[in-house]
Length: 90
Image (cartoon, rainbow, N blue to C red):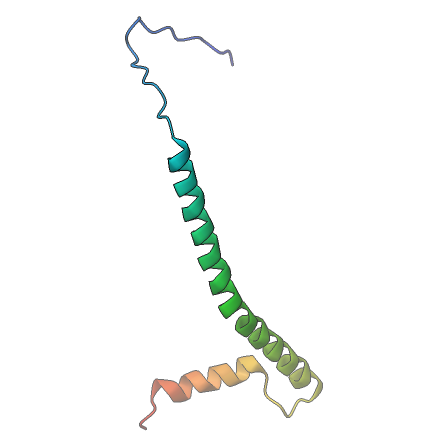
């Protein structure tokens, strides 16, 4: 495989100058980015503890269900709940 060079005639490609950002534009971009990060951090702080707590609860439930066969596992419970919830007015 060999590389070849393509030559274009003069004026075939229009070169435009790069857009110049003023310091005000950069400050606005920094403020927007900072605000976006604050929103994301706030959402994570609100949602993450609940998700982690639920995950730990399910993990402990699974371990207990594995050790004590009389207790159904979370998966068995979920499958039975789907059956009940699919026809609640039987």
